[in-house]
Amino acid sequence: TGNACLTADGEEWRLGRHEALWLAPRVPHALRIEPGGMALGPFLDPADQPRCRVQPLGAVPALTEVMTTALGAAPSTPEQVEPFRQALGRVLRGISRQYFP
Image (cartoon, rainbow, N blue to C red; front, side, top):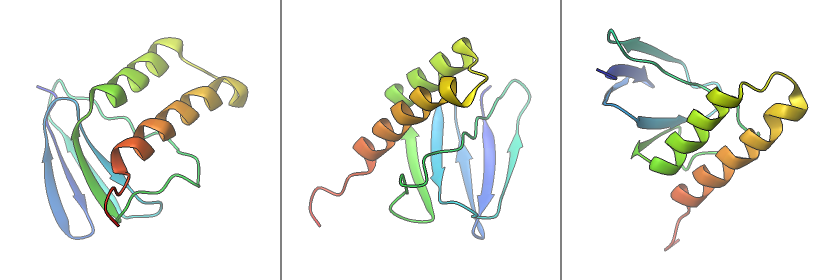
């Protein structure tokens, strides 16, 4: 189904297929994944931070593309992981930019 339920900072979010949340570092959380679902929680560059502790993103095709490519490539060394971490950071920064501060 691709569905999951995430609890973070005392709130609960229902996530559907390809939907995402961006958590700030060290936000306590728990995730319940329904049968057939999968979750990915990559480590990001410390400079890449969400606008708030828990930032719902919804379904972001560019994010799905980067994560699917990383899974297929299966990087195993820090040097191999870094380009994917950078690509993920670019996508996240692009969608979380504040246009009218």
